[in-house]
Amino acid sequence: MSETQDTEVQVTAQDELAALKSRADMMGISYHPSIGLEKLREKVNAAIEGKADETKQDAAVVVSASGETEGQRNARLKKEASKLVRIRVSCMNPAKKEWEGEIFSIGNAVVGSFTKYVPFNTEDGWHVPHMMYQMIKDRECQVFYTVTDSRGNKTRKGKLIKEFNVEVLPPLTPEELHDLAQRQAMAKSID
Image 1 (spheres, rainbow, N blue to C red):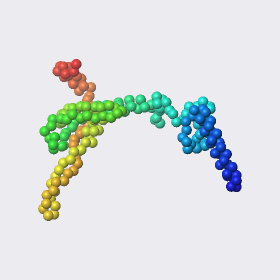
Image 2: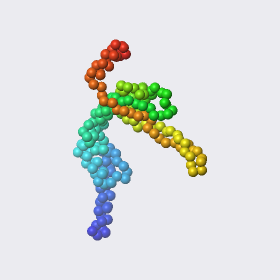
Image 3: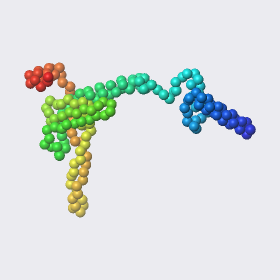
Image 4: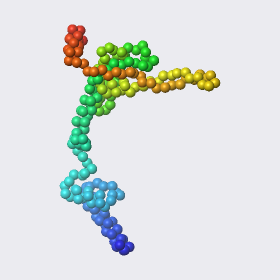
């Protein structure tokens, strides 16, 4: 292509861009001042054909790649997080060696929050939400120990250890559930 033809193509492209900008202004279409020719052409054509702007989506109908809406996804995540797990917790934190249990609280914007008292070293175990089980299992604490170097100097060093030993127990059998229900009914612990 010669230099004159190249200049003519640029001039016509600039003229077309100016014409499209004036047409977009008349139609009330918003655009960035440095928009390209192709993008502006698409916007104007879409408005002429009556199509909705492709960049705007209806929030109620947004579907993820897996085929579930945001509400379905949140419901599924809440169900997974609140599923009860039967565990036995032993505290390995020396600062809490005399504690009988601890109140744990966890939550996020999707599933809400869970707060439960979990006793330590229970024989029958304790039911906690799965999300809380993950938090208890991952928790660490710092313990200090004394180190003697080659000169005989003693220094204190810290290290992280697992704060709790968590043992996952099998779910209660129907017979155990029946016995538990009878004990709670006799004790009138559940209204």
